Amino acid sequence: CGEFVILTDKDGVTRIDSVSFGEQTEDIAWGRIPDGTGSFQFLTPTPGASNSGGQMQDQAEAPEFSLETGFYAGSQVVGITTPSSNAEIRYEVGGAVPTSNSTLYEGPITVDSSSVIRAIAIAPGLAASDVTTNSYFFDESHTIPVVSFVMEPDSLFDYEKGMYVIGDTAETTGSFPYFGANYYEEFEYPVHIEYIAENGAIEFEFSAGAGMAGNFSRGFHKKSFTINNNAEYGIDELEYELFPQNDYTNYDGFQLRAGAEERSRLLNELMYTINLQWGHKNAMQAYEPVILYINGKYWGIYNLQERKSDDFVESRYGYDDIDMIKDYDDVKDGSYDNYEDLLAVFQNESLSEPEFFALADSLIDLESFTDHWVYQVYTSHG
Image (cartoon, rainbow, N blue to C red; front, side, top):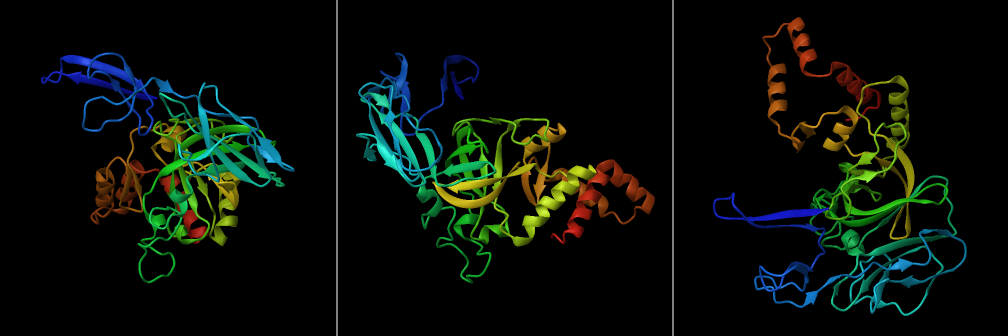
């Protein structure tokens, strides 16, 4: 991942210079010294000024842990090393992103309770390394996959910016579902995800962006998350057979659905099974139950499911140019124009019944539309 930058003359065509570069690191500049000459290198940032900062030749290599993520009985000892010479290791326990002010690693760490350790390597003249994250669980056993969700605690629980808390912006009525609370904001923060299969194998891990998901359910104590793959964080897509029933294996993210409403726990499984067995045409996301841990703490049973996005539509149905509208007026992709035209057609009272149904059949998938409303009525949803 990375970008390509072109400097052109004022005609917008004549190329003066160009460069391609890989993924960048926050608070580390990448440029030339002196300005405009020499080779590109990591630099100490000098915003609004000449590239005069101290040179940083490269990025330190990420630390390596002696004990891999997993489930253990009894206390364990974790050693941390880095291939970068003259580098010091700084680490945090509990989910925080390590910095140069974090605890200095001076020897093996003993862990005897479920926790997360994150570490970076810092070496003179080098940009800080990427963060290495491992999760350790003790005296726990599960028969379904486990997802370890690791995020800076303030990003979750800080009163002003934490996306999981009510904060100070909620409506003054103080009643459910607490509209205006932090968890209704479109916050997105970096997260590290590890997926551990039933047999204990670490199937994949990646860094991504995470935000809150759901509507009224955000007001419940147990909340849902959206995980967004993006090159800004790590990978554009996850390539893994998450759902064997799908004929595709690439995902631009997924949701961790809490199922916080009591009725949804039974209905979701029932309706999904019916949809599969009867071959109905509802665009239901594939899902699987998982155990979720947040920063080493047990958070409950969640459904890991596909996100309904343009990527979902393209993977499932092959359409790559779509309009996606939520709740009648929330445009998620494309524009509202075609949908508005569709509504205008159906509000034309001059159409006879045969004309109306012929037109409807030409504009929408009536079978899928009918299945959708059968499900809505049967489950008393909406």
